[in-house]
Image 1: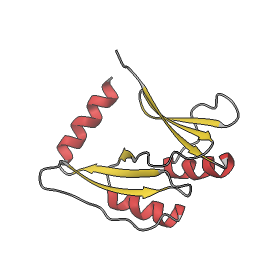
Image 2 (image 1 turned 60 degrees about the vertical axis):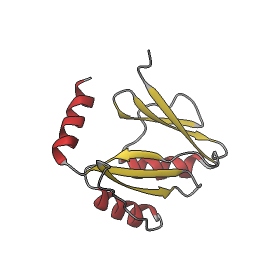
Image 3 (image 1 turned 60 degrees about the horizontal axis):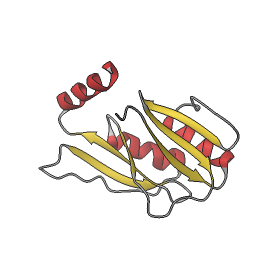
Image 4 (image 1 turned 90 degrees about the horizontal axis):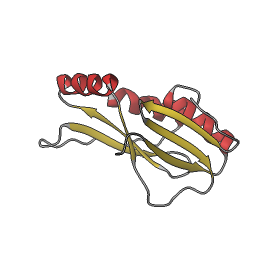
Amino acid sequence: MIFEMTNQIRVPDMKAGRKWYETLLQAEPDFIPHEGIAEWEIVPGSWLQLSEGTPCEGSGPLRLGVTNIEGERNKVISELNVSPFEIYSRKEVPVKWGTFQDPWGNQLGFFEYVIKTDEAERMQSILRK
């Protein structure tokens, strides 16, 4: 039985990487097990682990669910100097999404539920567990 997950992202400069991800996630790490590692629990049981090392080419994107994709896009463009990126949608897909990179080339993205009642139900489901 799988009950938890951790996704690791590597950056060559831990100090700069930690600062960048603290700004993105609007929080300091929840856990620092030792030098060169910082971890945030994004939602219960789902961890983002920042590790000092060489970024993995071709991995990702790690997509983060948000309630306002346009607002989050504008924030990362202005606060984190992310290159402007498109937001996509398709009639048959229940979310809109966009992809961007951190300064080290790691692929990240946001997604937002199109139907807000679906979003609210999903949030309740996750937070109840």
